[in-house]
Length: 154
Picture 1 (cartoon, rainbow, N blue to C red):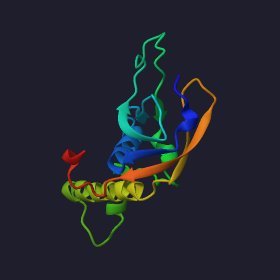
Picture 2: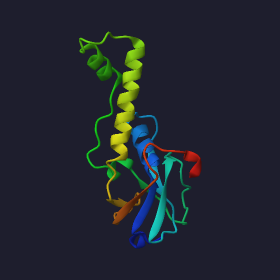
Picture 3: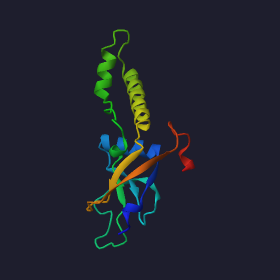
Picture 4: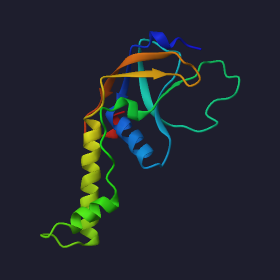
């Protein structure tokens, strides 16, 4: 297995962190940020969907680090639900509830939530490899801006 202790920093696109975390809170997929060996001082983390059969038994090339997006966030807010948005809209005496207004307001709330997540990324995190108790504190280098300009640049 590659030596995790030489890892000093992980660079990750801001959009990947937001997308991975949103997938988890929506319970769509088990999304992580993956760093693959061999490890060096500066590594790149990329979004990855975990599955039970990710790695072959007996694979001695070294296991990657799977970083849960929530450990990269400082006090992430709760994801807005459609019901909460509907309640908020219905409680406003100056606005008539319509399905279109509800949809529009919920979309705004989700976009605000994403922006808050993008701005709450930590500068450091403690990471490790599954099945190994060794952990390493690393600097988190965020790439890209929010909102993302053009994902084809990656």
